[in-house]
Image 1: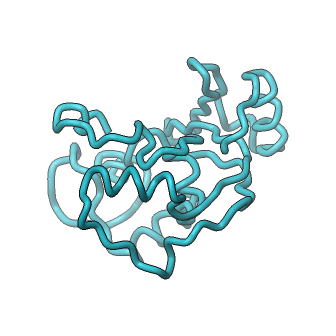
Image 2: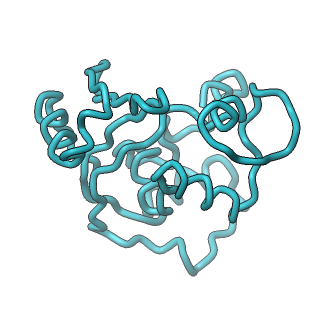
Length: 170
């Protein structure tokens, strides 16, 4: 479960993590989150505090899935619960990196198109772009940890599959 810190403690941990690079960020509180704007690129990040994560589907989550689809088949490998996986704190971009961002800040070639679309890049191109921006993609564990936000239900938003209008929010 994701450990909740008070906002002041989150800010202090983030500033400690950034160290000498902290002057490159504008840090503010927003609801229950600490948001850090990377000033050279005007790119917003949300600070995700460290915590412990249980990977895989618990018996409760499998039951919730069967309530949605009783014929569901669970693979044996990769779905077993692994408890107590430590996840270090991480900065996660708030929005996808769009073509307009890439065009503005990075000397990077990609497919022609309007700037409003998310950059469509091959894995090698993503890795190259991340290196140029001094970023990286999250690991599978990090991704599951911050997307679920401590939820112990089948979905981060609850145990039931929402209607299409609700899904569009995610």
